[in-house]
Image (tube, rainbow, N blue to C red; front, side):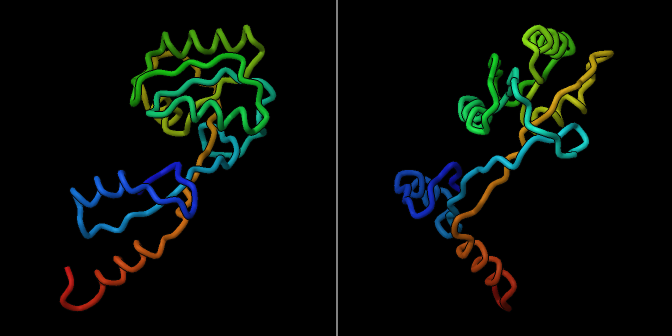
Length: 155
């Protein structure tokens, strides 16, 4: 799946690399679309007016732009390495910084789940996440491959 892609656009270099490793795999073109903000329980919440944004993902700048594009004033931005394991001290520092900026603490759903599951001691985690959905522009290649799997003699 080629993500953050525009419908109808071809990506020959990426597709060539995919074909080198998986010649028969369907190549899907998809984009990410913000779906709104959620709390740690997945309940929808209102967009904050101001936000301290942090994340540990592969393309942090895109995440920051997604939040800004929703009209949120990003008061500060704290990118961490992809798959970062947060410590209680880091979360405490982020929360203190957010309070000093009168801003909500906003991260990705992936990071929020990792923080909620982590062993952060007494560190409260009052933060929200931007929910982002993948939207496949042309799912036909995947649907065709799945249909072929169900045909007799295919495996």
